[in-house]
Length: 142
Image (cartoon, rainbow, N blue to C red; front, top):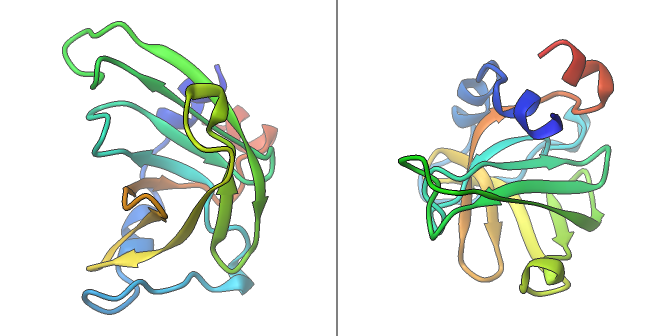
């Protein structure tokens, strides 16, 4: 239910977030705005598969297909913990329960005017829809 509520959200802040930064540079999120991570993302390594980051709850959720989630693919839902994150855009996530690293580092920012998370393995999750808060009140209003 949490993932479905977050995935159904309008892209109310994504356009504003995507308009910051400079071409080709990874531009850091302003710490004064609060957690930059909360939102829905796309993952090019898993086309059409949802990715949701919730800084307040300390969790990243998503689904994987084989390898993508288009065309009625059977989905495997997962949830992994955020090990640490800071308001300046740094994040570390434990993907070990899905066979990945226990301390994958990422950085929220912009790459060629696109907001998202650049992971240390080279992957870039593009922000689809940002959430000012992903707590229960935001979920209930979705």
